[in-house]
Length: 298
Image (cartoon, rainbow, N blue to C red; front, side, top):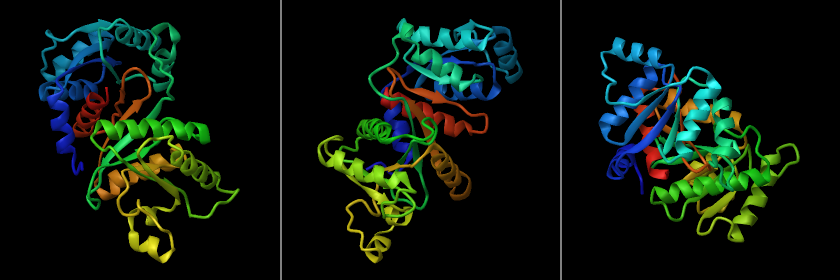
């Protein structure tokens, strides 16, 4: 059982360094994140963007980039395509989004010319360490698919289960979250949950325990499940939370970070390589955790 990010960081370190194509590296926060991860021993960067601006930023930080490749690309589309090409050519192992539009980068990733697609849907996973909870938990999808339908939710769960198994959780417990436990046409996620449970019972996810729809109180509190007469093997011990839509996921995850002092790492999975999305509002520690998670799931 993974109880903290300390274990994740140690596991990433044992795997050695991944070569990261850093798309849009002309940002002090991005340069900081990259150098922290390099110093920690889990990343070798290739910086892509306006070379003079990247070096100016590094000089202002007192950082020597002479040993780090810096590829001069000026336009967003050129930066994204160069980054994707590095993966396609085998010169890089993973992507990090820096000062670059996410849709522009994802268009390059999905361009068949670079052969970075798989048969999987791209989805976002957020691994969280919450002080009030006894182990790490994965929240999905909180950053990629706006309003997933039933078919997309199956793919989101496949990706999430694959990530947890890479982290050593062989039989994950999955809570399909909704406002309540009753199926309602006004809450399509409740009907989807019933379909997902049946699909999982038929072997869709292999060895996993999937339950829902359930409200957050049942997911985390067995006493709430008892009071509501909800028989559950997941209550009080979920490994994965499936969120109804991206708004709910974003609010839930960020609420835990800012109000409950949770720690978080996030990556996009489903392509040939993981993609780390760096926000300027993220701490250096959060960025390091995301790189570590990408290292493990690559």
